[in-house]
Image (cartoon, rainbow, N blue to C red; front, top):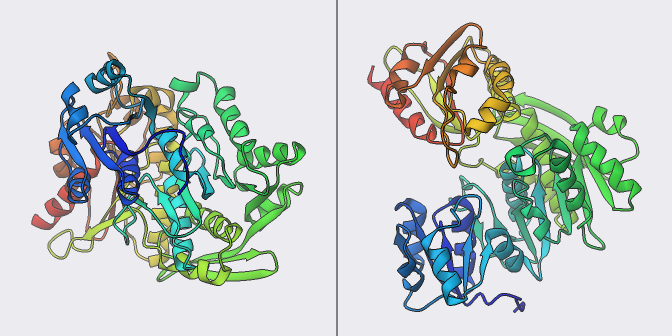
Length: 481
């Protein structure tokens, strides 16, 4: 058993129902810890945790620290999501109980394992999930903590029997610098989270700092198709960090100073998905991805290389990727309208909430429609996430959404931010040419979408907020017509 610098025998998690917190809670329960926590609302993740032995209070109150019958040895919080005046954090301070971040806890849980950390502005959850699926296909049974639910496994975390631990490395608050990666993957780098970092330069620097944390004998793995990630690889080579690149043949040729670890020699949309061929060393493997999009092809190459560096057999890793059925809210198929005037219309849901992500998803949708050879239109339903991000990228969001044939934009989901006077989603819709609707009434969105759809279209809901709840409603509304 690995010794810990923090006593993890009784752990209380504030916001235990969240995607990240619920995952580490499951691992703690599997390791025999007493786990308690609180959340603002009841949810399926909360009920699942309770069924596995966690003690959970709904709402935040000082007495929740003793919901498991005694005070915890440590309290865990996500400082980005939980206000510092939270009564449970105040009570912990009064009792002298240490308060740590989720990243600190995850770092403790990964001690003693070979750490595979997936970082980047976009694609962390998908790439982490693919890495897990590939390694499971190779019989490696890694421990993992992911920011989304694996469709096939129905879980976001697991305490495995293998020697590797696979996890997302979140850069949004620089918490990725808590980890000690043996394999550090950077999928791409693009300015984001400037409300925390202040400048683009500070944001970029956190990835250089992450690369410098690669452990002796380990590797930095960078996407050569992303110029900024490739430049990080080039700088790291100069600094003496072992680096391997992955990407298309053209990208590998464009960055000759970075050794190529995984080269995508071919990818083609076929009936079952996307057929991908990747060369690793002198060995080529081919697999079929069920999830569309060139960005997913690149993510799969990163997963293949990461699993191989962890000791996995390439053919078995490739078989695991072919078996990968996706992550909830990543181009997640919700259903097809069976009959009526909208018969054949398909509805999908995706977490995309940055212009680059929206662009990638809508291009993937277009590839899918084109490969099927029909005249289906793409109808995008987008909910902007955060006022700061919407103001910063309004023009870029408009350009990205213009890839759809028709667009419905909901009001901004503020999340942790307060509304900004005079700012609405019109700063996006006013820039989009063609068929576009600004829909401030959330409950009215399904009817608005129905007014734009024709039979056989592809409808996709996009955003990190409550828009996901609309996907099933839209599907039902079209079916009832």
